[in-house]
Structure formats: C-alpha cells, structure tokens
Image 1 (cartoon, one colour):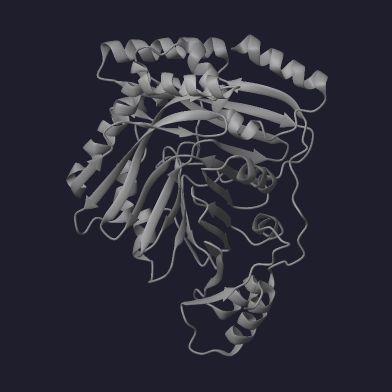
Image 2 (cartoon, rainbow, N blue to C red):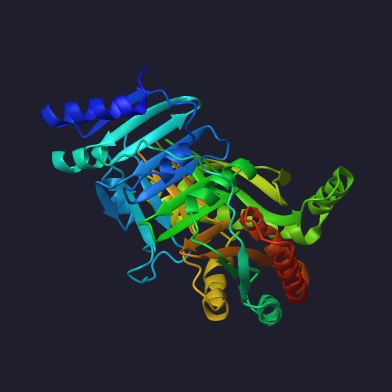
Length: 445
C-alpha cells in the first residue's frame, strides 16, 4: 500500500485530467510509523482545521480546508451527499452574534481533505467541491516536512478567575435561593480561568499532550486560522446515531481521584452513594428523557449510575439507548438535546435565563458541542474540559452543577479538578512561580 505523499501526488495527477469530476474520491494508504498524525496536523497551513479522536480511540480524523460552510446544521445536513461528513458544532448559546475575530456561534464545514483512521487502517478522502483549481491548490499546499511534538514547556506567569471566589460564593447563594423559591431545580455555573504564559501557545501541542495523558476522552481541535483555536478533551457524548438507533448519556456527579488506591476506592464509593450527586445525575436523565419522548419509539435507561474514572476526576454516568421514529433528522436531535441539563440546568429555559443574568461572561464554545453530521452516522460530544488559545493566553473553562446541598468551597474545588485536565499538562515553571500560583489558588479557594 502507498504512503500519503504518493497518494497526494497521484490525486493531483488524476484530478488534473479526469472528467467529469467526481464529488468525492477515497484512497487507502499506509501511515508512516515514524510520524505522529497530530504532528503532521501541526505542520499544515490549510484552514479551517478540525481534529477529532473518538473516546475509544478507534477513529481519528484530520479535516482541512473547506468546500462549503454553514451556520445552520439543518442546511448543512441537507447539503450532504452519500459518504460525506460535515464537521463543526455550535457554542453554548448557538443563536447569539459573535465578533468577526471569533469562531461563529454555529459553524459547520465540508472539508476539502479528510485523513481518516479506523482502527489501524487509514484513508484519504477528497471532497472535490465546485472547482478543479481549488482542490488542486489545497492538495499542493499539504506539507510533508514534519517536526516532532513535545510536552508543552510554557511557564505560567499569572492566573485570573472570572468570577473570583468571593463573587462565586454570592452567585452560588443566588442560585440556591432561586432553586428554593422558583421552578429551577438545577443550574450549572461556569468559571473562566485565564492563564498568561511566557511564550506563544500552540493548540496542537496542548492537544498532543492531552491525547497521551487524558485517555478515555473525545479529543478535538477547531481552528479557523492561526490566531485562535478551540481545543478540548471531553468525556461526555451528546449523541451517536446510526440509522434509527441512537446512544446518549447522563454524565453528572463528580469527585476527584485519590492519592492511593484505598483513597481512590473510598472516593468512588462515596460518589456512587452520595445523595446530592445521584440527584444531580437523575435530573440530567429526566431532562434527556423529556426532550426525546416525541422523537423516539423506545428508550432504555441504565437503572443505576456507574463510575467513569478519568485521570483527574471520577463521574457518575447512566447510558441511554434510543430507537428513533422515522423522519427524525440529526440536526433536530442536535437542537433538541443541546444544551443538556449537565451543562445548563433544569428546566432549560429557567436555567438559561439565570445563567444569562448572573454568570457574567460569554462561554463561547465551552459547553457547546462539536462533532460531525453524515447520512450514514452522526456523532457529537459536549465541549467540556476545553480551552480557547490565542497568542500567549489560555482561557480554561469548567462548570459545576448547583443543586440543593451544593457548597461554594466544594464546588470551587470541583472546578479546579476539572480544569486540571488541561492545566496539569503545562509546565508551571520554576519552583518559586509554581508555589506562588498554588498559594494564590489556596487563598482564592
């Protein structure tokens, strides 16, 4: 089997003369063992760019360039041809207007080039689009000179929370009052943590480190250009759909990992039996069930939550298997399910109103959703454990579900554990700087 460089050269030759042009070409190839796919991805200058790896690591995709773009998932789904996938997603509030220098609130694109790994088999998919010249230019722009990627060596110079802890306490008190006196049952409050580093940041470098360290997650990166990237490693699936079968889940309820095996088991047992966390998980199940009732024929829900162990945290999770009615589109499922009670609250309308009034900052794509639409199968994850990278700054996001029994200090510590999924991949610098940051964090918490 041929290597990627040979495949691209052959595609350029064939597409220069073939007539009529097909809508799509797919060629299998062998990935060179000495080159990491993420390092190859880092070498490319064709935008937009999207990277995707499934939670079980069985599928990996690099999508480059665009034949067409969409801000409406329904429009995107209707444009699909057999075998095509449209990549992208939407922000937490998908219908809000965003600045020209930011990723749109809803963005989907049909890539010019897709490199796809399923298991150990690789294929190169070319979506030809409307013009011969555009796809030939895109193929010619691919770079095969690849430098290896290493663990990030940035030093964290400063860290700021929005909101600071004093405001977080007041915000949580307001949330508990609203839960006590209104229809609100749960609301998810988020925090934005901005790190200033000592050098230019590389989203792909952070992604690369996270893939190696944070196993059992969806890994994704969306970059519109070289200046700004959205990257994350999320444990939470929004939904996976093939024909009339669909899988979704309730991931809610969190505790940290223990320093020893006994501590870890003790924390896990506490989480599995904690009334507050079990209630929070049940609210997410109830919300998903309510939203899917009109779209499905049958729903099977796991009776009891089970434990999901990740590098920094442990979660409660209940799986849901759905048999859909005929005629239900993927775009409609996206609209129905997003945002779930796991990232917004319950009821959704009341939770969103509280967040809009009290949270104080724009979440952007944090707690939005990313993935792909296709006629054959569709999958989206919830964009948590995520960050926006620009120049020397990283903005890390995390949220905590507030229900009766929530305590400000405990929820703040949960936020710290969640952002550590990505933050722990950074080099905090010399011992003096690291100690200063830890001291500030302790004082804030």
